[in-house]
Picture 1 (cartoon, rainbow, N blue to C red):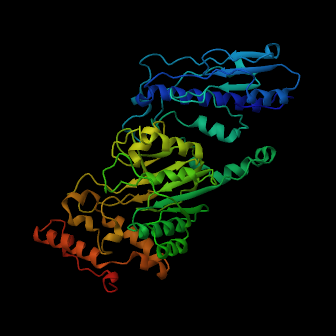
Picture 2 (tube, rainbow, N blue to C red):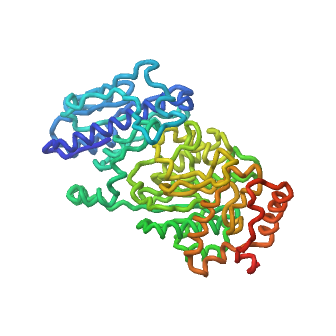
Length: 489
């Protein structure tokens, strides 16, 4: 619900009320379209006996009549003894005509990012019909097994954030609007300084976040990731979630790299196989517990940042890059921390499946309405042809996501993915060079966390010899190894 002061009725507040109602409608429409949310019967709450939110609004209005707009309520709202003071107005949203808008229209498998694209239009109510509303009350769908018949909130909304959400496409059928790509979040705050002061809105608290759990295999990657973010001149905090498998020695290096460490208990992926690579990937869900931040951009530790990403914090949850078909890649995603959301994810993890057994499959089921960021924000190091031995990386990317064998698991001299036939789709010497360039800019005291162990060297040599014996045509097995880490083994 939203409220406004008793006198006068400014146009701005009416806009806020209307936009909130619009958000609830879009959310409900998307839930109906998505098959996973069509199981069972949806129950809408029925308000009785002067709910607390109404008492709050009544205090603001005092002796005046109250005009209430209702959205998504199955039945009338009842206020005991107050019928003469209350005028109920149903906010009408016309349903989408059957077969006019399909789920595949809102979330297509692929879009051309270089050509203009638009999402289907949804019918919206006429604003001028509801200018006299004081309050908008929206019913939130509840599961059948919920024991609490009604949860109610009273919001003092921020018009800037409400507008932002409404301007987002209703699906991944187009890229997020260009308004935020040309104006940074900080610049928007400066332009709206009067509103910020008037409504006592705080500067947004934002951070980059990564997570390490179960082993120390990615400690080096996290240190280099931090260095790459620092090199991009970011102004955001760096937060690393670490479970008890990360040693104090490694934590010292991570802190020195710039990470603020937050200890966590890892979370098992209920749909993964035992000892699989993604068995504990649900630990990533703890990013929603970072309530000290308004927004966080999660980045996996096998990425590096090549251009400043700070401006993209302006987008709402959940913003990510497409992965395959209609799903997004969870290696980089913008989320809004919330303990309520975290508890919901924990509750649903046993009953909602995951196509890959890990966090990405689960999150795509839980957030079917996601906002599409440009692919260059999470550029996957993947090449469809293995016969192109250059595999050059594009120049305009913001990050590189290192699929396959990770750079610190290879020699500096070339990408060792070339030495395994099944991994050659992930091979790129130019990408390998970019990662090692970031490594070379780090203080020497941090480089020891990326040392080459005898086990790593033996594995590289094994596949290098196999490539030599098979005379792989790319010829990387012929390169003379000069990686100085071998001397320090």
